[in-house]
Image (cartoon, rainbow, N blue to C red):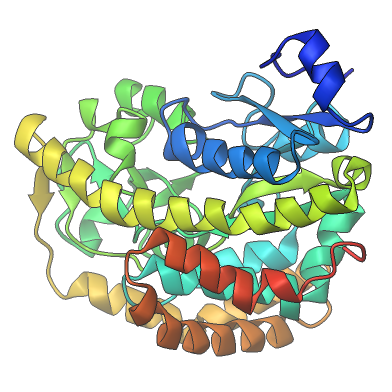
Length: 371
């Protein structure tokens, strides 16, 4: 049974103004309730959908993992416990191996807009297996975004690659692969579970966005941030939508959903992981005893050495999971990255501009009735 959305008008008024086919949907979000996804990105997107459909499509956002955790989100959507959620392919690479391969690819530089735009375009326009894998679990990936470049947040200073050996580090994607090469013991734990693991000493570090020091409270136990960027990876899936919900929407509801998806991407990528992320890091240094740890050239060499073999490592892993032509996906992604490097300077940190470009370059080219 689906969970109902709280009434925002009286029953009498709703009956008078709402169409007979109005639908209320449930989004289960596993990040903390204070995460930008829950406080800003999704509420803004859902408000636009409701406005554009005249109340025909409304959403109930239940955050903090009350319905499902990160690893359980895909099955929770498929089983009908919720209509959509926050999808993170590395948690289920056997289900979404093509998208997981993209997430395992480092996008050089420090601009998440490039990675988010390129990943969105690749998945929705140039990667049939990405959509086919999602359809196999009765889902549709929308609202993809990129995080800020990952850094190490640790209980003790990590100043050299040699310091990584034997350290227990929560990581994912390409960062996970690099750290494993350096001899770290990579731990697969949810972002929320990493807090207690840091507290108890079950983790030495978390590799992730610096803003998570505040969102998840990592800086209470991890006071040392290694001053090295592990590059940008994408995508996280901000709107992993069940096809059962998609099919229940009217054509107008589907179009409104596609129009709102770029808002999730732009809000998360720019407002959260570019602007708010840096503010948080600065505040944690100023007010919470966090220290930046300088590193030598050995970290840059670690990344360079990894990138030499990255494409083959990722392609072989994807092929083992059933992807027929991973190299074609990698080629499409590389081309999209170069395209978005050209678009990103005009976008800058303008959220609405990014959403508009995503609509023009990607979402406007989709046929809502054929997805």
